[in-house]
Amino acid sequence: MAIIETVIVPTHGQGLYEFTDEAKDFLARADIGTGLLTVLVRHTSASLLVQENADPDVVRDLNAFFARLVPPANDPSMAYLVHRLEGPDDMPAHIKSALTQVSLSIPVLDGRMMLGRWQGLYLFEHRDRPHRREIVLCASA
Image 1 (tube, rainbow, N blue to C red):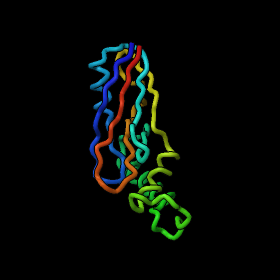
Image 2: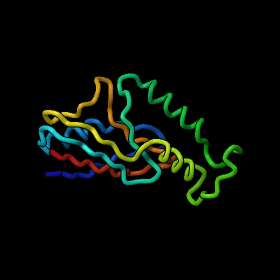
Image 3: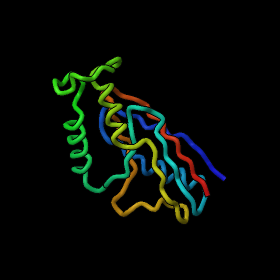
C-alpha cells in the first residue's frame, strides 16, 4: 500500500529550503510503520538534498559553491549556453539540477525517517525569482 501527498514549498530565490518537518508530519499521517519514503520534486530547475541541518554555515557554503560552479548565463565563462528563454538563471538552474538529484529514497522505521542526527531534507531552488515548488511524498510499507 502506498500513500501519496504533494507538499508545496514556497521559495524566494536561489537557496536551500528545509522541509524535514513537513515530511515527518506526512509520515505521521501515513502511519506506515516500516517502509520507504520516496520524495520527488516536480520541476527541472530545482532539486533535492539530504544535508546537514545543524550549522547554517553548511547551507551558506553550499549556496556559494554552486554559484561559483555554475554562474549565471551572462557570466563570460557561460557564453557557450544557448538556452536562455527565461533569463540568465534559466540554463544554469537546469545544470545544477542535473548535477544533484530530483528524487530521494529514505528508509522508514517505526514511522520515522532513518536520517542521521544532523540530516534534514532540503529543496534546492536554482532560480532567482520566487516559486511554489511541488514535492511529491510517497510512503509505502
